Image (tube, rainbow, N blue to C red; front, side, top):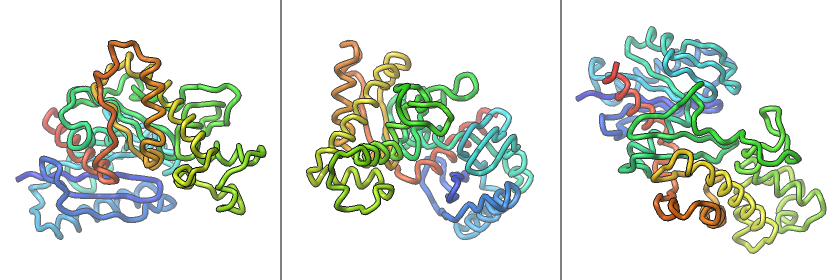
Length: 320
């Protein structure tokens, strides 16, 4: 039996697991990233964790075939280099080569969201579909496209990303330095900011009774207030869903997916967000596209990253 290691590297935590060839997690561990210690310390901790997990599982060292890492930010998977990961303070880091030197195993890296979506395509909500477009609605809005088991990256490894498509030139400032990007609305951050801004501008909401300081409002609070009958919160979620639907009306004819998989913390709003999104999407799509693709929530949860990283690394190693 051959096994693969999947690693999901985040700015706050690292999750590491050993999986079998079909994506079953045998052992896993989650621990703080401690990015302030620097890249070498982080990679050494990953190598040590892999060895500890291998011993815990009783797996011989020669049965660990490959290691896959999902890393935030801009990644060159062909060169194995983290080009820029702001929350890790990584720039032009040869991650694959460094970790291979520490473990003696082949190492393959890619963007964390691409591998999250790859996990869903291979073993989660996208399983059985040929063309999987996936979105994560979290602090920002990230996306990826998996075509017949292969990650479609395009030039500069950014294919399918819609988070920084400008949708409102007079909207919120975006972390990228521009104004009105899609993710300033369609993200957990954007949902909360819409609610806070409208309250600060004089609108009333149940959220004012719950929070003395509107800066404490989070997207989950907006969903909770909506379920409690708050009109402002319902309108925020409806407008967010419709904005996402308008964006997907460009994605569907461009990529023609047979399933759209949606996850991330912001997606926990469920049908409060998805229903207006679907309505807007159906209103805008050419009839030939309607009812010819599915829209599904992710299934693997927080483990999609390590599952995708491990399965993708196994595939890359076979092709190497």
